[in-house]
Image (cartoon, rainbow, N blue to C red; front, top):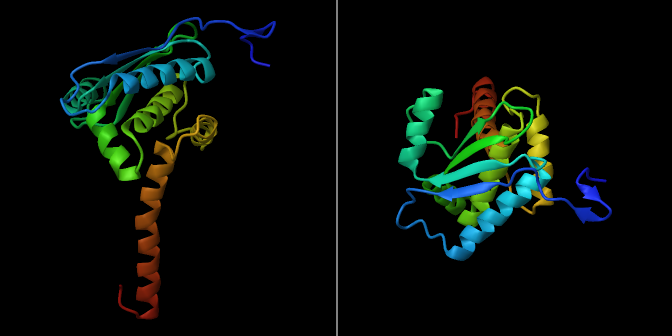
Length: 187
């Protein structure tokens, strides 16, 4: 039973999730219905994943993500999502920034809507906010992301995509080595 369930009532979260839409590209294509769906999903993530701690999510453009990435991580390029954990054990979990341009491009690439891509990015970012790190945790975040994606009916997440990308060149290299050993030309 969830700690928030008391006498079959759901208590409101300690802090709500806030979604800000700033500096969006003119052709971002987010309707008022899409914006409501994104805000609703943020509230759901707050309850389900962030345990009601709350978080802020900024949806903005590539240029803004590039500036944030340079300022806070020293990387002079845009990215799809940045997470800024608060580091506090209580209170707000932190802040996210998501590139609308990246979200739209990745949505086209993977064959789903921009809203779904934003939900995937938001889930990934919130997992970082609550302390998970797929680069150092031996697969724990990947498993959690998969569990929450299935619970929220979302397609493949970021970690799974990145692993598939890395696996393709590795598989090609293995085939090339086998072909070299056997004397066959690479195809």
